[in-house]
Each structure stands twice: as structure tokens, then as C-alpha cells.
Length: 470
Image (tube, rainbow, N blue to C red; front, side):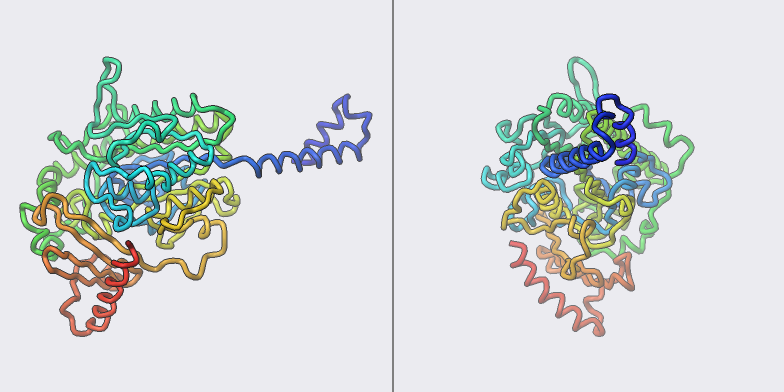
């Protein structure tokens, strides 16, 4: 590139009189000034959250049925984390953890409608970057109480339905997300770095609608003639292996299974429409990325894409999320970082990454100090540096009771690379899984004598995590 610029300058009449040596010196100075300006420029940030989107509902993750070309392309330009998890599998709590970098035990968002305090928001990445001079925008599902207008320069918050009325027209929520995100980019001041949090409602079900998943017409063509493969965890043996209180008809996971998956035809209908909603999210993300490119800021923008929780696709006879099994807690996570060397783009990392890592990763990229209250870790240490020797090998999972213990009971767990220990406190029930021998989490080893020492160790680690997470 330097040689090409020199040749162009040499053929320019204004520079021919300077001579070749002086031109080369001029070019070097131009590069020095350009590099200095680039190093001083704050990195723009886009955080995209998809709702109820589990890790394998993505073409880049090996799903040959789903159509997600734009997310796949994003993964090919960045890093995809293959073992990303949430510390609580429900929207309001997980989104609070994404914003704050904290476990539920610390940020305290354990019920619907409960907001972050002004002090908590000021320590979240949203507040921190705005205080640092970023033009801040939020679009879509906020989920953590009601957002305060004074906290953002640009705010468009809405959720709960797939189809809405806007300007006398019926508009899909994902199309609104797309329009509003692009409006933010078009209206932002050009002399400030920007932060956009784009938070989709889809592919979350519309719980009160009999059809549950209500996509737009245009996405149908991508699934014509396709059959969605059934989960290999749909066998009745997995339902029978659940704790008795989860297998009860009154349990919310079983209730919603009846809504969506109780016949093969319904399974195909609902799963196809769920995939279509993800395809529509993918297209909105593609349009957002194209706008960033058109504005010339794509190469200086950090993009983080994550699901707010996993999702049961009829696995174990369940629907939705909440419980500490892999299908409920494992999510897609892609980071497209302009600092990533070309040779590292399109790679994967199998380290244990968490939703609480989003905030410190964003703050570090923006060169904003990470507050002591943050419990997550900066993921750039994994993909821009040599793998840290002390990187986590386990994490704490916690979920509050929703309504009552029969509907959605509380649960806590220590999730490690080898073992998973689960406690259901309201039912005085324990589970222990050897993930190496039983990756499907089917056999509870609590009563197995050969695992007594493991069980005792996990109980101790559980007590330590209960304190550590606070």
C-alpha cells in the first residue's frame, strides 16, 4: 500500500518537483499522523442481544437448516465462542447481567419490572460509556424494568408482541428494531463515538398468542420443503429422568411443551416459525452492518452478539428455559473486534465465556475503567492475548422462583468442565452429573457411592460460590 501511494504521489504534478526522497518522507509522515489519529479514536460499540436464542440455532454452529447468513458472516470476521453460557436463564436477570457484568446475587434483578438503581446503571456499560462521552442509544426490549429517557441520547423501547401498530400500519417488532437501529446511526453526531444496544424481542414467543411464533411473510421461502430434525433428547426416558417436580403437568416447562410440541406436526410448525424469526433477526443485523459500512465506521466498531438465554426445543419434554440444563443456559456469542488480526478472524474459542463478560469486554475496548463491582472478565484477553492461565473452569448458576415452586422453582448450580452440581432449594433436591461420561445430563449420581467424594467437594464449592457471587 505504501509503494502504491508513493507511485501515485510521484505522478502527481504538485509533488514531482519535491523529488522521490522527499515524497517518501512525506508519505511516512502521513502514515504516522494517520496511525496516531486512529489510535486516539475511540472505538464505536454495538451490542446485539437476541431473545431465547440457543447456541446451535445458527448456521455457523453447524445447523444446516436455519438460514443465518449475516450472523455466519459476522462469525467469519470475528471470534465465535462455542461454550458461552448465561448465569441466569431468564430475560430480565440475564439482561441485567449483560448490562452490569454481575451475577444476580449482586445486581438483585430477580423479578419482572424491577429496575437497576441509578447508581447501578451508572456502573453498567450503558452508563459508563455515556459518561465517557459516547452517544448512547437503546433499541428494542429493555427488560430490566422501564428504561429512563434521561439515561440515553436515543431511546426506542418496546416488547411483548410480534406485530405492532405504528403510524396506522401493522409492523413486525423485528422490522421496528431494524428501522430504529438504522435511524440511530443516521441521526448520531459524527464527532462522537457511539454505543448502540440493539435488543431484539424475537425469537421469543408471544405467550398469549395460540400460534406463539408470528414471523413475517418474506422469511417463509427459506424453509419451504425443509423438515426440522427432532432433538435426540425427546425420548420419554429424559422426561422420566427429570426431578419429579419438573415432570409434573403443572410445571411451566411442561405446560408450554403442550402448547408447542405435543404432536410431530405442531413441532414442525412451531420450530419452523421459531427459525424464521431468527432469520428475520439475522437480516436486520445484516442491514445494520451494511449501514455501518456505508457510513465508513464498520472498521472501527466492536460488535458483540449474544443470546439472553438458551431454549428447550422439546428436549427432556420441556419448552422455554429457566432450568440449569445445557439447552437452557448455553447461548451463541460472536465478537467482531477490529483489533483482531486477519489470521485470527473466523476462529472459535472453546473457553467458558459468560453473559457477565460482555460489560467488561465492551468497557475495556472503549478504554473505560472497569468498576470493582464487575464480576465478569474481558474476553479480549482470550482472543487478542495469550490465553490466561487462570481463566475460569466453572461458574455459578442461579435462578429465582417465578410465581411458585410448582410453576418455576428456584435453582442454583456449580457448572464446571467435568461436573455439574444442581440444587433445587425449595424441593430439597440435589443433582450431580458427570459431563464427561454423561453430556446429556441424564443420570443423577447423588446416590452413587463411587461419587461420594465428588459430591462432597461439589457441595463445598457450592457454598463458596454462594458467597463469591454476592
